[in-house]
Image (cartoon, rainbow, N blue to C red; front, side, top):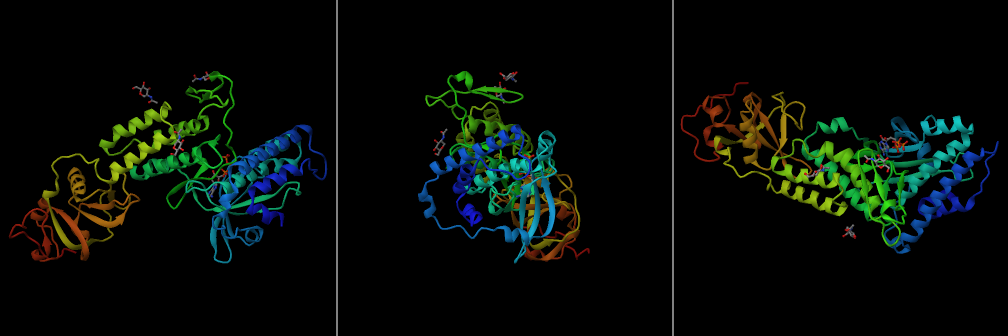
Length: 466
Ligand SMILES: Nc1ncnc2c1ncn2[C@@H]1O[C@H](COP(=O)(O)OP(=O)(O)OP(=O)(O)O)[C@@H](O)[C@H]1O
Ligand SMILES: *[C@@H]1O[C@H](CO)[C@@H](O)[C@H](O)[C@H]1NC(C)=O
Ligand SMILES: *[C@@H]1O[C@H](CO)[C@@H](O)[C@H](O)[C@H]1NC(C)=O
Ligand SMILES: *[C@@H]1O[C@H](CO)[C@@H](O)[C@H](O)[C@H]1NC(C)=O
């Protein structure tokens, strides 16, 4: 019953915890130092519960009731369990839940992790140390239940024995993601890297204006994020804070980073103005934007991206201005306005309808969407023609029906027409120079639709060479 209530009402859960102390653990009493730490965590959770009660109005409960949350029975029935990641405090496994075998992530206290180990070394009290770590997970679950955004991992349910259990065992059931691999991301096309940054800025915008006030992620690193269906989501929220630093003078409001300090204003209310938002934004700059935003961006967008980097790196922008700047970049990119106005190379190509590409390997380019060939996202055939003309190997290209997240088509660039197969509606854009050299193709000239002018008579379209 307590667990069921807790799922529905995080505020009550936290409240129950706070009002249940001072609790007793069986066995030896925890040493005073550990007891103080436990009480500190409990107070932290109590403050969060108070914020939730004050800020999340009961009116919001008039929204449709959430689907039934998963619980202990689901966790017990989990199959195909395997490790996906672990940190200092928590361990995450993937598992399939009955009846449909839907895959989820199960997060629990990492008994062999550094947090618990250090605590046990120090205090020699395993149950108390597990409980100390469990508070972090409980705080995270409470926050996840109160927040809702595509950039925040979705809590599907939890299994929690209640605060009477000395270890306070808790398992949270989350949507399954894949850990963020920065090295891999560095090798992906700019459009994908831009999306990660945009997702992050949208998350920071939500956090700065959240129902719980401005939330900061005190421990902000790429490893706190996962990707779910191509969307960046934060999964580690135990070090999030809804409290803004209190101050008496501006001197109290220094935001410190290893490479740089920022001085903020102390407001009339005795709070450092925007400190939570600015901390998130600078962390986004130093861990994400500097690595992911600039390289291989379309050259016309480079100056705008440099501005964004400069403005976030010096915290001249808040989250609102940063989001606006990102939306501007997205608009320019989607609308093709970034393309420089220069004579197009498309006239040098003949459009041939009724061919598609086989699967043979061809030349590679970077950063390709495919491992077996050169696949790039383009605005239109003009841009693709410019790209093909800039690649010495490229003899023809195909605008595929596949689209990227921005809605741009993927184009396949190839050097050899040996891989072209008759059939389908796809248009192949063939370099005129390649055609006149007599590359064999399997269509009568009447089937070809020219891009610019008539196909020259006598063009040699021989029998298939495959
Ligand atoms: N929903 C999820 N799907 C897939 N992997 C996840 C999920 N949540 C977390 N992970 C992975 O598990 C790791 C540990 O989770 P988490 O960051 O919550 O633990 P932590 O102990 O607080 O970590 P840290 O030491 O970084 O603070 C993450 O770095 C991430 O790679
Ligand atoms: C930032 O401030 C701290 C404390 O005031 C100081 O010790 C540190 O040297 C400063 N760092 C930089 C990079 O200025
Ligand atoms: C931003 O630009 C100014 C002026 O060019 C420069 O002095 C400053 O170092 C830049 N800041 C960052 C973070 O790049
Ligand atoms: C950012 O925009 C939101 C929504 O328009 C607004 O409520 C908030 O006050 C703005 N924040 C700042 C710091 O201007």
